[in-house]
Image (cartoon, rainbow, N blue to C red):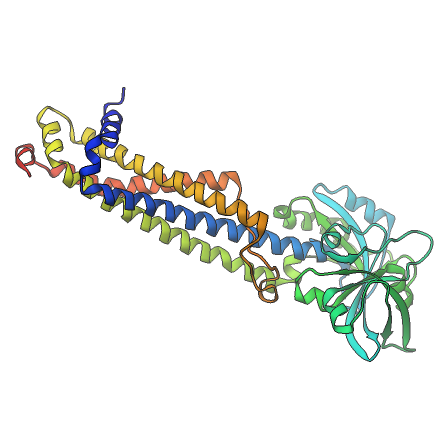
Length: 414
C-alpha cells in the first residue's frame, strides 16, 4: 500500500475538515481549477470549430487545389486549357485525391427589371460535387446536368435574390461585354447562402457549356480542374504530386499548367483564422499559470494548518519526501475534483451549443451566424493531462517548505 496516498485520502475524508479554515479555501481552489479548465476547453473547441467551419466553407466552394493555365492571372476572364483523358487518368491515380471536376468562369452582368449586378458565372460539368452547395441551398435545388441537352437553369445567392427581388422559377438576363455583346436568358432553379461575402456577392452556377459558348471555346476547353483532397493536412504534398503530373511539362498545344492551393488563392482568409492560434496559446498559458498559483496557495494553507501533524510525522521517522508526497496527493485530489467539475460543465455547454446554437455571431464579420465548437477526444485528454502535470510541477516549489520545518517547534506550534 502507498502510505502517502493512504494518509492523503484519510485527511481528505476526515470529518474534522469541515471545521478547518482551509475548507473554504480548498473549495475556492476546486472552483478555480474547474473555471480554468472550462475556459481552456471552450477556447480550444471554439478555435478548432471556427477554423474547421470556415475552411470547409472555402474549400467546399472553391476546392482544395486548382489546375489552370500558367499564364492566367487573377481575373475571371481566363485563358483556356485543353481537357485530356491522359491528364485526368494520371490525376486520378494520385493517392489522397477525392474528386476532380471541370470548371470555367466568365464575368458578366445580371439584370432583373431595372436592377443590375456584376457576377461571375461558374460553369460546371456533370461531375461537379454539389454536396457543399446542397447543404447551403435555401430554396430550390442545384443544377441537374447531363451529356445531352444544355441546362438553361442558374443557381444564385440569397444576397443576389434579395438585391434583384428574384425567386426560384424567375427568369434572369445575363449580359456580357465582348465583341459582339451577348445575352443569355436563364431560369433560377436554386438559391444558396454560404455567408462568405466574397462568394455570395459574386458567383452564380451555370452549365459549363454556356461559358464555353460565350468564350468561343471548343468542347474540350475549360478554365481548369478543381481538385478536392481526402485529408486537408496533406494538401501541400498532393499539390507537389499534381504538379509533377501536369505542371512539370508543356501540354501538346504548348501551354503550361500551374497548381495553386486554396490558401494561396485566399490568403487573407487563412491568415485571419491563423491568428486564432496565437490568441489560443495566450489564453492557455495564462490559464495554466492561474491554475498553478491557485493550487500553490491551497497547498500552503494545507501545510500551515497541519504543521503539528508534520512535526509528529517527522518525529516518528517519516522522511521529508514522504510527507511532501502526502500533501501532493492531497492537492491532486482537489485538482481531480476540479477537473471533473470543469469537464462536466464544459461538455454540457459543448453539446447544448452544438445542438441549439444559442450563442450567435455577426455573419457579415465572421462568415457564420453561430459559435461553432469542435474538439477531439485526444485534445480533451491532453488538456486534462497537461493541467495535472503542470499543477503538480507548481506544487514541487511550496512542498519544499516541509523540509525546513523543525519537528520540536512544529509539535509545539498552535
